Length: 186
Image 1 (spheres, one colour):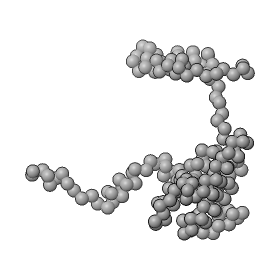
Image 2 (tube, helix red, strand yellow; image 1 turned 180 degrees about the horizontal axis):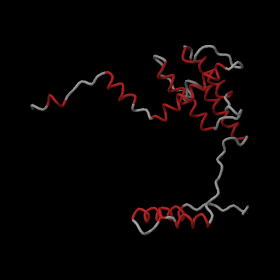
Image 3 (cartoon, one colour; image 1 turned 90 degrees about the vertical axis):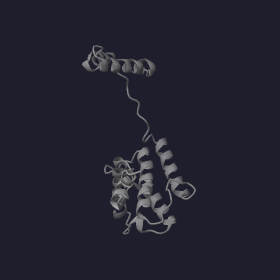
Image 4 (cartoon, one colour; image 1 turned 180 degrees about the vertical axis):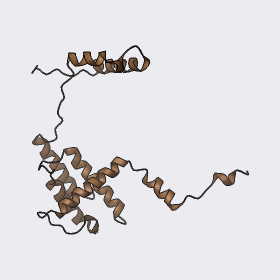
């Protein structure tokens, strides 16, 4: 019982904040910052003209309206549309940001029951992009026989050591178990 005193301690507010913030992966933090910067750049653009922050809005309907405009109006610096996956990430990132910055904000922008117009805009935009072939998965050609020979002759997949043998077996399992269709263009 004498060690029980050392088993308990009261963490500081700083320690608690650090552990709470550590639950969010750094890539998520970077992604959120990136999209908030893009959102603010879009909002301040002369053609858009919003002179206040999204976080300053108290109306969910106004937030939804402006998010719909953003999702449909956003383009890359080269004027291209963002990928379909990026648009989904945008909404999730901004929703996370609003939850972190607006007191009492307990909504998820991806919830179609709370934000039906935003959901319809996102869904319609994604379907429009799919029809136009934007963001479609691009098939990659398989390895040629010469490329396979180079890989199999490399020391990293040599059967002379345990790690190389493991890599070689893994490669063969992938090659034999996951065949790719060979294009008729060759």
